[in-house]
Image (cartoon, rainbow over all chains, first blue to last red; front, side, top):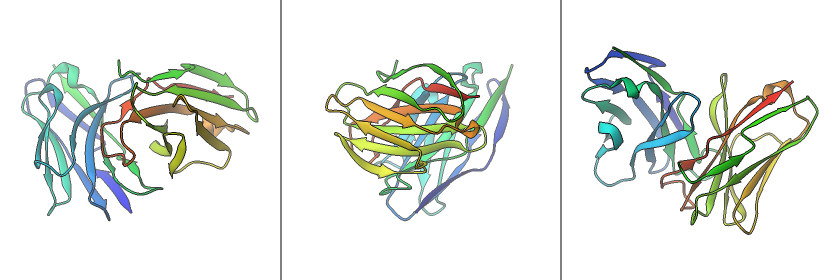
Length: 114
Length: 114
């Protein structure tokens, strides 16, 4: 079985300050982990993914995430927030076999204050 | 533009009715996934097809069904609609069977059941 927890439903940061969005997962498999972003009234776009290669994963728009197996975490970070980063962020675990093949976290809404 | 198309963009219908949502995957992608996004349930995986065959079934109601055609486009059929079925329905496509590669999401179909 697989599950995903996003520890903060809402995060607010000032423009130019660091972003940290937290994600913890549980998986009976060797999981693949993803972060997707959803801007208002838009579809979802991949930010980055971990599929058992390097544990520090770099994505688009300056985002990165570190896979820590011992902590079952895959937190998303960015050194300096931009206004355009305001969106909903989803942590996703996949690689299951059927019912839990793809599990989305509940999402974290990121607000960026000018 | 993800390369995944969904029609229609919006659908308004009445309780008890049946609707069909259509999805065309990115060129070359064999997997199609369907998701439901609602305020109370978040983003939930419904079902996956790979090269015409059902390969994984998530939290999909018995009133819902899907299929993938030889040209790889997919349809999600929702019947005996209830008010609670009002949601945003996304499809996504990927190259792989195991949901370990990037999924490319369509813009979604917004369904309103009155």
